[in-house]
Length: 512
Image 1: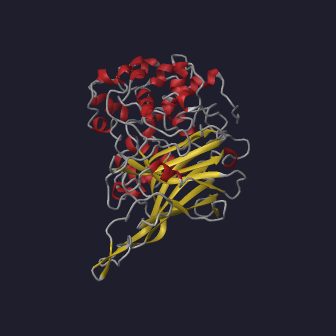
Image 2 (image 1 turned 30 degrees about the horizontal axis):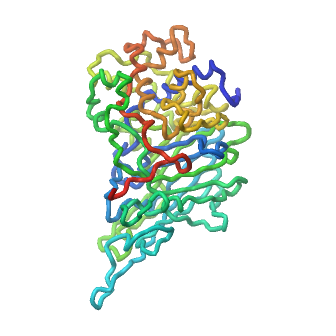
Image 3 (image 1 turned 60 degrees about the vertical axis):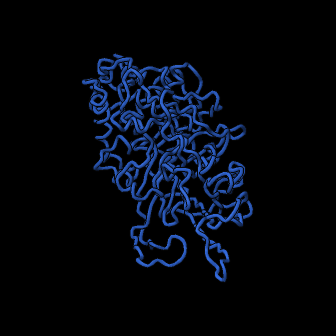
């Protein structure tokens, strides 16, 4: 099968741009916060967003940044325990570098929470304090921290459970890394940005001859969405969400929330296989199969339960929005437990998506859903990547976020907020955006809204110009060109971000 050049041709990019819309078709509105019944009961294992992109920090453009966010909807004032990750969970980032829908490289994160049991002498007794800090914090392993969070990262080559495992280490050989405490507030941590930066580690990855970086810690949630309005049956006037001048008319519902980020920056040569430049990626979280609750827990930290047995996957996230609004409610827990190689079981949710019909109903636009069923155009783009852009040569259809590592990164200021879709419309040179990977600036919601109501088929024309099938044509799209104007009234491009690794912004503090 054909390999892909460094830069796709203009014709390929035109196809790829509108295919980018299709990749999200059937997806819209919200990131994967609380997306399935079971995961709402274990928020520490809930993946919210997954990003994979060529690093655009100066001097780092041969590196790939992988970011997995967990533990959604963190209120900055959520003390006194805040948002430590679960030592009884296994957090993983998977890379498929040959297109066979199976992980070839897995980065495994395990956490340890160490309680100091800091005490004060009250009268003639030593009494443990009730807080996780006893004073100001500014350094790694601060003496005033009553609870220290640390983690290890292993790289597994081959199957995630039976493959070859090795520990990632710092230059001195240590394999344990410290996680900064959450942003409690200014009196506890006067300069949180500087404090968190001390927890960015340069690391050695066995089998990789280039140093990598790792950071784990709280960040401001980078996802922008009009969440409450959307899930209230899209409680917005059609005139507003079809007016491009109103793209930033509504407040970002997640503006005041934080998340916990697991971030890696790895040289692309350590991720690709042979001459194949495309990698697929996704994140997952697993928990032990059994949990026993102790009716009389011992003194300590998190002693009320005992976990054991095999690892059971409870969260999965590659492309944004899939389990949120594509997978039907009866199968949401099943999807979270599944692997890409088994995605044929969910094919009907892509070929016959329900979201267009739901949108037509709640927006009072009867008959506005695209009619080209089954949506084979979406199967091609959503499950395989875009030919000539981010489709592996020997691809097996499966849901993954796919990135062509031979397409150069674009500096932040020049990035098109609509990724490849916006770049084609603007006749620009930014081919490094969603769905060719996903950058924090990419407005995946607006790209999705364009596609779900038929933008792909309008672009395909009556001559099947983009090769998505003869049934995918303008007459199958009742909204016509109006589909290109859809948006959620929140602008992803104005969310604050850092210029370099770990890219996501300083978390909001408990007091400002």
